[in-house]
Image (cartoon, one colour):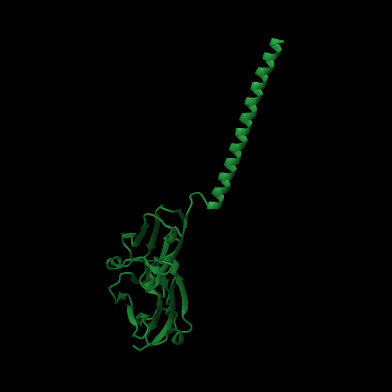
Length: 258
């Protein structure tokens, strides 16, 4: 074992692997000897931690950790490391070692936007209407993690007034559902809402609160003016029609008397 301080310097040729939260990945390590046959030296997989000794994961076909997501897979001369249901915590460097030689190294990156999202990511409501946002955190690895609630902010200010904001969570198939409900929207509720889970996962959504239903005040005034103009035209037509009827009655009576 040896002590590591800077992975990027020590392993500049590490292969970059990118995955989504929840994916199953397979890291390949092909071992061959001079006769092009499988080596008898057991292969070891390590995971590297910053400022710490490497953590042994696999020795030959045996697991060295309790996490069942890390499994050895042998295919011909390829001693693969399989990791199922990857999460953000699985990011880092992985080494395959045979004897005293490091055969290959990997730099694994998990895309953050696949680990957390808010639905909807943009919403427009009217004053007094409810605001409902759902934050989904993917690939929760163990039951202890569901005790860590998401943190909600609006324009970077923490929403901690429980009399106005209601937040509930539910864990379904490894996905944590954190719900934010604002029962009666006000103009002050307009802004960028962020759901934060742990130290690395954040997602944002835009909320716009309109003062007038169906659009802006100016559009409503224009509609009212148009409506008043139409009513005036209708009233004028009614007066003209009545005058014409009275004229006909008077004309007929005049002719009859003559």
